[in-house]
Length: 396
Image (cartoon, rainbow, N blue to C red):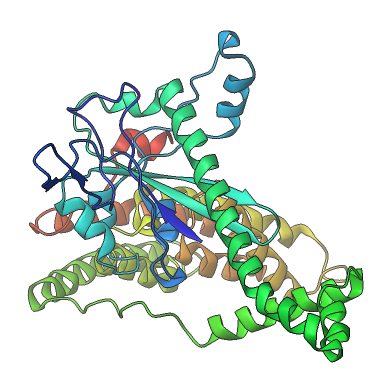
């Protein structure tokens, strides 16, 4: 269940009231219908293919503060565990690494600037997400107010209860015809008892069948549109940027290779993948300087640490599988996922290269940022990096 809603700020003011997709009308004194001034809350259900949850996770956040103190009591502790991360809708629309769906574009054109999601669950099989949209442009810190967060969480719980009750009502309505038939036809009693059995093994089999059906349906693919191709102008920017970046790094690698008598050089394979990110997916999270530097640092350190394990304990082919797997997992946990770092971790895990090559790889990643910033920002359609340099060094 994907449930979306709009809610006002913590004071419920008319000026900063937020919208939803409700088109309900109320009659006035003349018997005519008119739209209400305040559209507080509404829900809708949609298919999983248009689920905005995957998008909200990728957006840069402008706040994730925990506003709790001893005066808030148990509610304060609840909010401390439930951090609402508001996302910038415009940054999502400009991100080419996210699925292209028209929903958030329509919300942005309607004047909404930020969005956040609050999960709810009712039982084991029913889970959902309530999406809140905001029109605030100034004093956006009000969205992080303690009472505003409590209001949204409590509203989410109410919506989840309504959705759960609706699902139960549908199940009850579907069971009524079979119950009426069983009263007149004794032959259906056995099938009814098998369906309503409390046997844990039977319940497990039903769950496995449902999950298998869901898995097979997902393997056939979703209904999202294929991302559009680059324009000719942007393709030329990509060509110019990749050529400039590779020309600089290839030349430096050749100089280092000559001075070190063939022992040291840049790993040009991961650098080629880095060029594809910096100039082909400029706004993607994996392309940002924070991911470029920290991702390479984490993955390389983990891979090189496995080279100290003797080959009779962990063979080379096993090491090249374990080390990159742990490196990629660590990057995901730390929020610095960077695909070229995964490629470099395989090279470093082979044991044929040491810490000097690791340092040169970090140096090459740092140098690549200079032409990427200069060339990408020369285009009116690009911005690199998408986050401030302060946020790049210190995650907020």
